[in-house]
Length: 210
Image 1 (cartoon, one colour):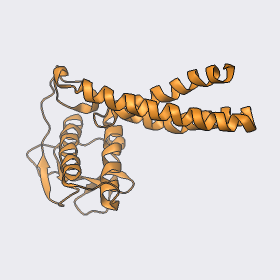
Image 2: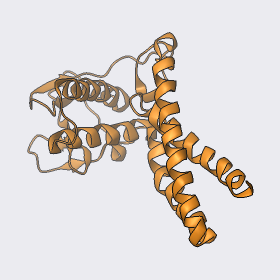
Image 3: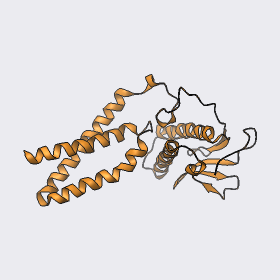
Image 4: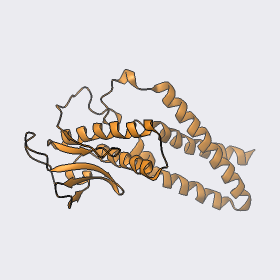
């Protein structure tokens, strides 16, 4: 189902962050449509899912603070604009923090900015490489240490069990790594997570040989 209509008309659909993910709701509030069912790119659909998960954590109190709320609002506005641009139709955006509703118009596509991670209209020079790689390195170290320690302990009981646990961990995190690879907020932690898993698989055989 594709969104159509003139940008001068009142938008028929409204973007909200629901418990089950981002959803497009009609004016009556009875129809809920997942963004991926509108024909948008897989990257945008994944970014919207990640955004709704962050909003849900804020609602549950797992993530708190004014900065987190402002970030969720700003991220939602950017994604709503990108969603309107990809579908070619205006829509309404409901702020997940204060509940306010605003109209979002499609924007003219900028070829120089297409394909940037997370759909952010940010020049390459503004990518926070130093803090991002620092976070990735810390996550990689923690992940590798945790996996190596647990695997060595299980290896003393049954080496096969250690292999199974490592495969289960890698398989369990694979979807999160894939979805978060293009999201500016999460691409650094998932990079560290992926590197940590690979590093643990390198360190484990060396530890067993030692």
